[in-house]
Image (cartoon, rainbow, N blue to C red; front, side):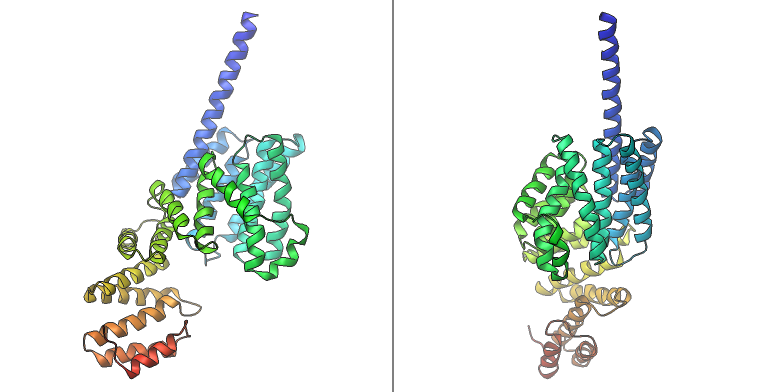
Length: 377
């Protein structure tokens, strides 16, 4: 009897140790992804796949590395096919596990997650039909995983995302409404509550919950106080993640806290110049613009002009399809700065250039008024 008890104790201790090691690898890899240390994350998840070949986490999080590469340059579709390929490998592995064990919670969870992220990519590309199909397939998997293990807090991330966006997306994109006919109704209030719960209690999904809370409060709820709180939490945890840092700067601008925004955007410019991963031309362009606005507001005109010129150059580099609001407003500001400095002919060239570009908000009216009457502080 004593020997049997000892054997059970040894086996349970070994299983606990293996679970701890698995959790440690996954958590380290997740942290590396959000820290934009993709090479390190790839090594971590390669180890996970070798040591735990039958666990679906390795292939799923390998796909998440590609997802974050997409997020850092969202306009580019360079990584889209690779992302889909990796997600399909993850889905295939989960399906093989479920053929042997239909109630395998990990396989249900990660298959639902893989379908969900493929749907997110389709939604980003406004391929609503495929996005809806993946969402329809993912939801029952997540529900079943939760029914089998209601202690799995990470599963609630899927409920929170669904409840919020199932109500909001049809309002924002009416074309989606007919596709929602076969889906359960959403509840954005409940969705926010669920996302907050995961952000505070999740094991693997807490940072993703924070990310959703930051973006939905910024873009849809217009709740600057809440979005600032989540942005700070993410930036404090991952100070070299350009997406989190630029959101923090943007939120401060919306709050009209330009001194704080200037500090953040100068940090972004410095990291761009030092070659930090993910600090792209677009992110630097935005930073140059808002630093220029700050210096114009504080009458540091030479510094303001310097940053606006940098913004103008970057805008002409990255605005391949059509001119951005950044470029149009920058040209107006450069014209005003030259008017202040008594360089009327140079100012007029900037105003004329605005009239040659696509109109942004009331840019034509502003430019025409400034052509008629020189800008004064």
